[in-house]
Image (cartoon, rainbow, N blue to C red; front, top):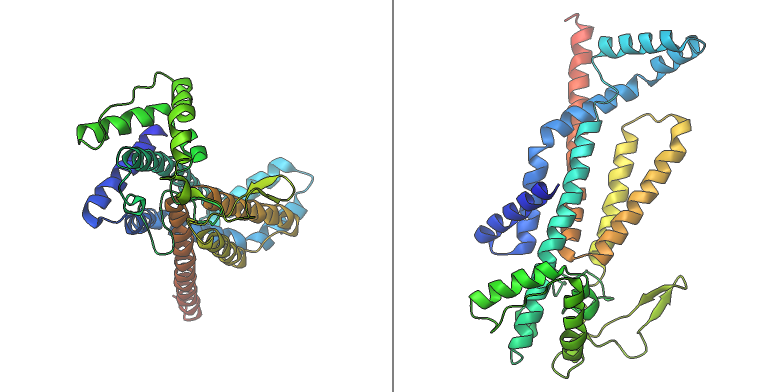
Length: 332
């Protein structure tokens, strides 16, 4: 998994060297990855649809051989061979998509942490700079490496910097020192040393008159309670407008409905399917609202691509089925 994370991160950096915009880079990267796995998806969707059309025949066999499990399995295998389908035909692309999703999550989280540490250290050692020039904006989002929400600051705050691994601090400081941006290299031995630095150096600086105004809360809108236990704060210089989390949920719903519409679902599976939909909706909202906006862009673009791909596949399959039906009519 670490190899895949590193490979994805390297590819993103290579694309950025050409495009010079991380948001556009992530969009292009997402489309490239989806195009590479498209042949697998095509085969998977076809297999899933054909399995769906076999549901009536499968039910007949299940009813006929309900008292003979061995005979039922044999007849089911014969049916699969006759129709040229596999009950596991749709699993591989789904597994690949999930692996890529989690690899992208870790890769972009790693890169976001590097960017946040770089932003903080650069501003700390060059306090006369405009901090807005240090961040990577995208449309309504002020800092691509912070969440797209008014409940997040556009500059890295103490909470976000505490989540960064101490090795990242060491690596980024070494890179900045080598280019003359900062005068010294951090050399944390472990997380405890990093936390001591954050307590003694980072926290006081974020509370200074140079930094504090950029992460200040709107008066009366700090530590709001959601559902009685989730603390939320709206900031004066918010990072985003919560558009990507909403888009992630909306596109997830459309994608799920399209997928369900093309398959005949057994009533006994409807409950578990609905549970899966709700779980994916929660995941999309949670990840896109709490993690960096770059990952949210990947999620939304991937969903939009999946919607377009599904619509195109459906038209293609319909045309193929009509062609086969006409061929049967004339005896070909």
